[in-house]
Image: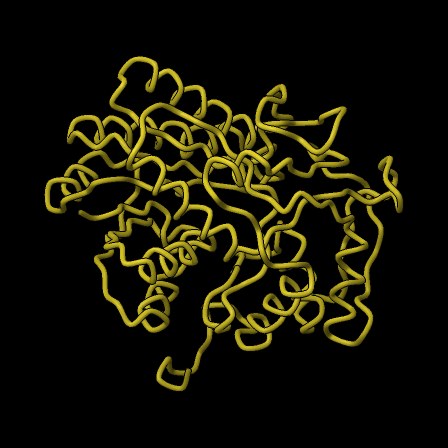
Length: 344
């Protein structure tokens, strides 16, 4: 049996590939490489010493998916493939609905046709929107505040309808909070196209000298220092969470949502100062106006994942910053290095 990983060349996908291979799973990866690099998969092979099949394809391409399912004994799917920038989704909503929602519908159609009913879906804490009470638990009201979050919420609804229509389906909806960090080897990490949309790669690119200063979006939120508060989780902890969710869906039925976070909230400036401690020098930053669609405070109630999946985050903010910095220093241009991979 193979586990199909959609979007497996991406940031979270590549780290999950490592954990799956190390746990003894056989994997097949599909990715259109629109926001990722095949080099990440080469490095996954180097880290694990294991090989796997890769298909360059888009999940909206039903014929390509048909071939993948026909040629491989797929037993379950971990679905990462999707666009993920909040700001871009506000300015280009149709692109997000077409890619994220339509792509997932096509994937599920092919899964159903081939009798594959086990699915771990990469959802997001953005489905919760602005909440009056934190930490946020899985039973909180769902009301996304931006098109990216609404695509995740729509997909969750589609998967609920699918599960209700056919008891064969077993689905885990993993609501991530804010993934950061990198593999401890320094070989794989977050490699955004252009200006980073997420905080930590923005900080690291400023620290390494690629960018002159960090723009802090919003300094008038109702928080201790006026900057937004988020639950930052190490990407390796997050990857392990997918293994635990996969283990559950392979041997159960129905659909369940799980928060994956640490249960602790840190402000943007707290993260900046933590990173300054790691690198030993100040990070220049400038306070700017809020971004459309952003919220003030979001951090997770993680008790359900601990109880039902046997999972909890183990890495703290110091490890998050150290591993992010190691990745950035060893890969200042991400996967776009000009020197030979043999020198790595």
